[in-house]
Image (cartoon, rainbow, N blue to C red; front, side, top):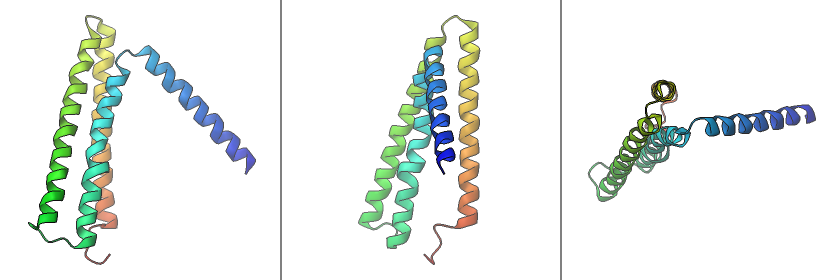
Length: 137
């Protein structure tokens, strides 16, 4: 048990050191984190909890509670899209005329978009497998 804890502490320490080094080397790392955060905020923090609450409480469509919850979800989606656009728009500003930074910023953006596609596919597969919105809860 103690050996596993020690390996976990070493892994976490190395992860923090590597993340800090990357953050120091890439001037737009904060904006990349903004893109990742914006992509993950709405579906994980708002959409799925709201939909699960609606299913569990059996809130009828077009009732006052349903409209309020859906409005909250759409408002948070708009905030998420605004944050996403703002973060993506700032990335090329940092790259300037440096070809290396331009390539790196585009690479980071492509990796982020690939992670987004992978996350969406994973969530869809989980939804299909576990059926959290089914009527027999």
